[in-house]
Length: 195
Image (cartoon, rainbow, N blue to C red):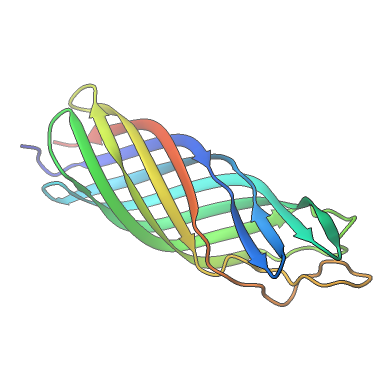
């Protein structure tokens, strides 16, 4: 039986894109790679309290029948997720399946806006977000293992640009909001510290 301890998981993987429709038009976060780190503390046998961070750098794309009839890059987009949550291990041993969830904040930072369709800058946004994950840790030794997992991220109201025609093209200011799901999967290493 394992005593209370600390786990550090470092991972790298693939983040699927997501689309927010408005009428027949849409904003889209493109697919990208992602990396993350999770710090877990065993509060009860098999239950980990966790702090996690995920980053993905991607593009925000737009298709709008007035300002961008064909899908084009609106801006680069940096997304940083900070979550607090918990995971449950379903069995001990070398193969340790788990499921968990969390809540926290998503920081969206657009940059390098496409000046062909937008004259100003898009605002940074902070969104409340939920996450759910499931996977397995395959322990190579008492202290080191391989982590494989899938994750669903739910930003609440991730949109944050007003889409409109005119000489300014796309302008920031008013909010286009909606909730979407961003899925991804990753692999990495888990390190067990402590007794």
